[in-house]
Image (cartoon, rainbow, N blue to C red):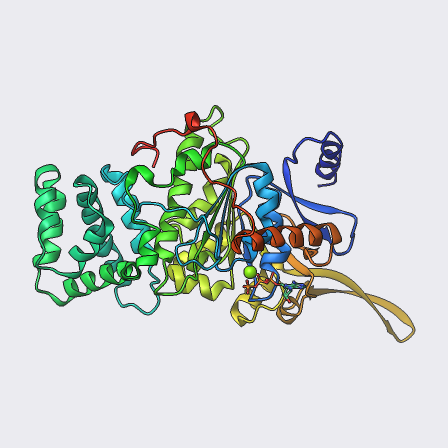
Length: 470
Ligand SMILES: Nc1ncnc2c1ncn2[C@@H]1O[C@H](COP(=O)(O)OP(=O)(O)OP(=O)(O)O)[C@@H](O)[C@H]1O
Ligand SMILES: [Mg+2]
């Protein structure tokens, strides 16, 4: 560790972009910084107000050396990082619910590329799996059937150059057999799968239709619809944006059940897919500079399918994931007991902020950190005797009561570390940056300043995105 820190100190003197991420300083040795490698996926747990945004997410957006995808439920992260990121590349905001007031939000056609069956499968999967499993009996079954239905409809609509509005009509009435007819020519197996769902009189088939139409329900609002219903050729080009510079894509949604969260999750999935494929074409099979996904409120806004696996295997591809959740119970509600456990345990690093309440999670963390052995001296009839004692390093209550600027880092096979994480409000240069950026953001929202354009200034460099790139 000491050698590693010296190496980083040397590297810092050469003005090269850092090859590692400075997470914070050790509480017991405030001058010693703790660095993570760019490959380390991190899961951050902290209740509301614990400092996820101002102690961790802001820093991770600012210090990313390459493309950043940042998801959020509020305008705060966008406003606070805007100018720094816009100075280094292009910024784009996907805010279908208009939560930020950003005047130049991008529109992304959910049908772009869906003429390719694999793309339709991926989009439908992301949409269907963005529905929380909580409390649904046979949730996995309905999720899978809703995905089947959506993939058929998305593909059929794309083949006929129809709009997502058409898809909404199709999934709301089982009497409409248009998508089956469209698919019959090209993919008869898909046509028969869809026909089976539509023509089955069973109750479960009703539930599948209900689940699919619930997903598309937000599109009843013309404002929300506008963000995902545009001609494919005018749609936001995901691959071009992700792969051409130090750009930043913000995805904003409230993440509630009637929000556009499934569409936000589908776009986040697309970004990961584009980065993943590009990494396999890169010379060393990894992206350089790495792409960073800062997934605030991951369970509600960015439930990318297979996130647990992505946390484990993305590091080697140059895709760094920082995923933020409130606690382990929230993960298990979202991903199921097994998925939630895998998610928390598969991340190479875990950062625990103060104020967690779940007794089980706190006790499990305390047990994981383990015990410390110490000798205790005692006097007995004038002679000193020594005995070994095992003390819990951090009790559950001590983890809950961590000081508000502290966090617990559990990293691979290293002993647990207590870090001090300064908030942007406590460190003057950061505070000035945030205040200045927020002022610019407010000016743009109020129309006093033009927004930066998400498109490339050189039209020659805008590539046509084929289905494989989408
Ligand atoms: N403008 C500000 N000046 C000083 N302190 C602030 C300011 N805005 C927020 N804070 C403080 O920063 C702390 C951390 O808030 P932060 O928004 O980072 O929490 P969070 O974990 O992201 O919460 P949430 O889940 O609600 O987004 C809060 O306790 C809040 O009081
Ligand atoms: Mg926050």
